[in-house]
Length: 449
Image (tube, rainbow, N blue to C red; front, side, top):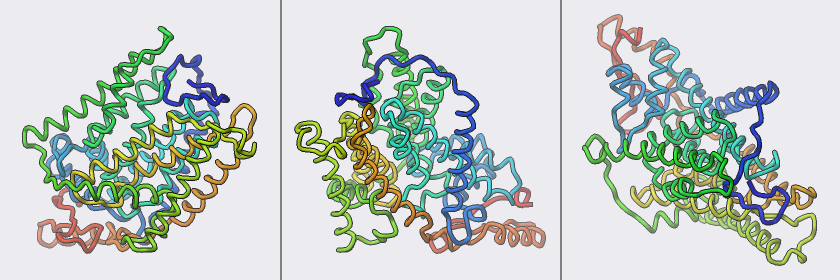
């Protein structure tokens, strides 16, 4: 860990960890309360028909439907859209243990709980690099309040990997002091890697972590770094094995221009402007707002540079002590996580900006770190907090296609009626309603009853 009060703080340095601290009942209570609040907030963000009575696209049409028809264990080994999705498959398997009438509630709550747990995990992991609780809150709370792609990622098990990619960055730069923390970090790396092939972006960071040797021979960092790398490799072996054997397949239409312009116009503005103000189409207004977002980024970089190179020209209230390694690492992984899927697919959907946008926030928080020892230099971080809070409030509930239904309870009643009259289960329509071909859950009458 770097010196929390010195200007030479090295945020990505793995050094001798402090003595193991036992989490008391207050820490446990805080964690439970944070997860409850985060889960509730996540479910409340969905307007219209609501998260508890709707099932999103792949959640029902692919993961729940296949788990019911093929059996949870058989579905667990199935590939979809070019890669494996271990976490959604596991959550769908749990959902099949409940009655069909509870499917929408179980899937939505599972997704909201996982997002809240990831936010809590990032809060804990970031403590090694961000000494103030305020800074740690700024890099963790936006996971629950992400202001972009609400139509895709809110309360959806199919899209949990976008949050997982962000958490993965923190897992690779965190050195837990206890066995439980190291086990959790390793498990998270494997689960995310087995759910999204885009984790290839983290291969350089994983190698750095596995090969780096801290000065203290008693540090758990070397062995832990190797375990993290092994977990990443295991997930990637699974993903590439599917591609090589033909179990997974996906068309590639590379578009490097869209990858670069998309990052400039979408990923950077996403967390600093939000979905409601940006809109759906890139217009002159969008470009103007993107420019405003880049001004914020530029101001943060300039202030951090001045405080590093010419500290005397900056007033004490704005004299930050930037954590440059953390900021640079977050920025590089933000660009990689956005550009790689766009480069390969040639499309730029809003959900591609979720993890990159969260890493943009991390980079800004790292640049605007106050002097922890003296307490000076907090004004820039407070200004960033105000901006993020405004964007969160404005984008807390944004209208989306899930809000239009159809509701799971009504459609399930119709399907049960059909089962009773004809003995044949119809396909149950789910959100989004107007896509072609439509999203549907296909399940036998034995399950629907």
